Image 1 (cartoon, rainbow, N blue to C red):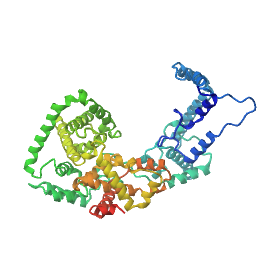
Image 2: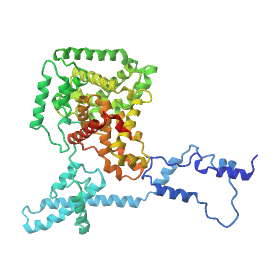
Image 3: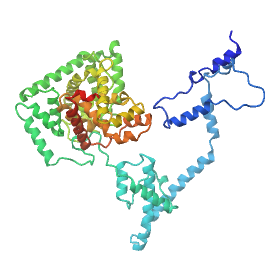
Image 4: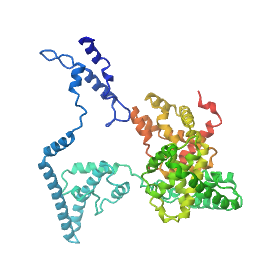
Length: 550
């Protein structure tokens, strides 16, 4: 039997590691973790409490501790009691006062609008000049408030408001939030106006999918004379009896026009033969073969040895591009489920791995464009004929299979392909930008922590879908584009954010940046620059592997 002194010593030993104590977890803090503040709090928490006069308290034994906490996990009506207490303690006067203010503001706004409607249509010029600045200041103050608050106003709306400050229709979230009466603080409003005008003009929102081949960050079509000439070259090359695939790759490296992208992707991926006469028969045979797989294997998804695979696919499909309505349609999700399940059954060495679901989407979108002319982002696929949908599904399956055949070691056990590529990325970055490499080493950021997703999803989580499709134009044209060339694209992509990376001064800030890079407004220009830099790196390092090492 241990003495009381030994018990006391036991409870004090390794107090910081007692189960249940709060420990620091990276990425789980809100607000962000501050190491200095955290260390100060820990020091303060470890200080012994000030001594109080009187009889010293006896050390707590395990039996006393157990008796005190024996009811800690009892299930009762505590939650209901807490809710009832909260309802009783709610200050009704504050609630009523707030509601009355909202109603009063609404009434004043309505009254002011009625007065504006009944005013004389031809006011004197002097009066107009005096009234305009007042309304302008109110508009700008309200607009500035909304811009600072967050996403209440879309970029298009805020940009339009900046360009026309004298517009009569003001953008407010509700009538109760509209400014009422005359401005109370002219200096504050002028400062807000100056702050608003100093904000950088954000580019207009570009559709995530629609008109991907024709969109730049300016949102304007790029079908210039040069693009029209390139389209003619594609049509001439594809219209011959035997397509020169090497010439097609050279032409496709700088991007493929939307009109000829479906057949070009099928040719470059090896799904279609170069001989034009054989293409139709090959398409029919491969499509029938795919739906033969459906009849043969798809019913087995409910069998015990395939349940886990199908369950994981079924969970991942709704997460695929959740911001694009096209991929949230039930019929589209069923198509994806069939494609992924059949691929997993036919490739038992890897089976289904999370991330493969993303690789279907570019093929699906490109092949939908073969049958429609309008935007695809909100397109209802049920309006397509059943035969067209079947063709899109089969073509997507075979082209995705051709892609994965070249990178299947990314998805086998322990994913050795990704491990090798991440290690090669680290060595490459250490050679091309030592400052970035040492900065991440200093803050203990491992490349595997952010670049694993870059390799597993081929940068699809980092770029908008329209940019991914443009990127894949070059990947299809480049030898080993999805495996070898992708490494140099990732290196160029990382160094592209050099300034932002070097400005971050802690682990958490770096990880948040690298996992949420601001590419939402990227277009063809940014992707073209990225690919050009990647090609430069490949030219310098691909045939000189010793350049990786010091």
